[in-house]
Amino acid sequence: MAEINTTVAAVMIPEIWGSRMVVSRENDYHMAKRVERWDEDVASFGDTIHVPRISSLVASTLPISGNVQFAATTETEVSITLDQMKYIAFSITDVTNKQSKYNLKSAYTDKAGPALGEPIETGLMGLWSGFSTVLTAQAEFDEDFILSAVQELDIDKVPQSDRFCVSYVSQKRALLKVDKLVSNQYRSGNPGEQITKGLITLDIYGVEFSFSPLTILSTTYKNLMFHRSAMALAVQKKVAVEKFARVGFHDDYAAFEIYGYGEVRDDHAVVMPTSS
View 1 (cartoon, helix red, strand yellow):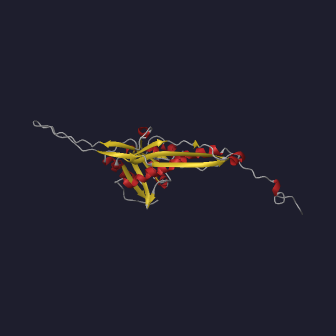
View 2 (cartoon, one colour):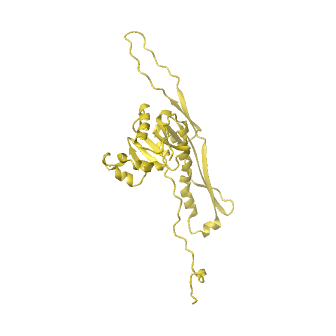
View 3 (cartoon, one colour):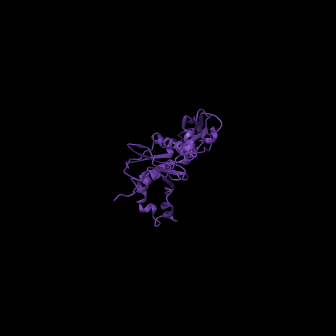
């Protein structure tokens, strides 16, 4: 029996596009907000930041008689060069603007910040190669591995506050399996609520842990435990989307950033390699 079905009536059935667009999810960036920021030093001008490195002083025994010996140390400096310049650009034709159901300018403008944030994240994580303290690699995090890194920071008299660890996302799974690190039986307060509500951070032995899919993989994942002052970032030109003068039947937009980063204190970071 003949019937009017979706095949014969195909031209009568419209395709409907949703009222909202699905935009790509961005990584939750971790490094830029956990290192020293020197943005203000170069906000107006300059291409290099020179920071004197002041040596530690050593106490001497005060002589009963005789002359006092004065300390005289030849100091060095740390330099951060603002040599990183990244941009994104997009052009939307007038026809596309007119016929699109969506506000394309707004949609792509919202993506500019996250897109330009990723190279800063990977650049800071790439500083692992310059740090001298590297633990022996193992499959995944456990309590003793964490305590070994904490001990290295303690030996170097690193301040107890502002300690962080940024590791590959698989290490969140590894840590959540260690009952001693997450159970209320061993931890004061209500850490279970902090852990299960999702903003992938965890406080262990005075170190704030977070987990990034952008952790550098070079034979092993180069997870980092560090103090805020171990690295520095200076963003001279913050991201702002600008529109070019019209040439032809299209609107052109671009956003760029200027920044620099570097290692500041070698003994304030520990590389914790894992194979997973």
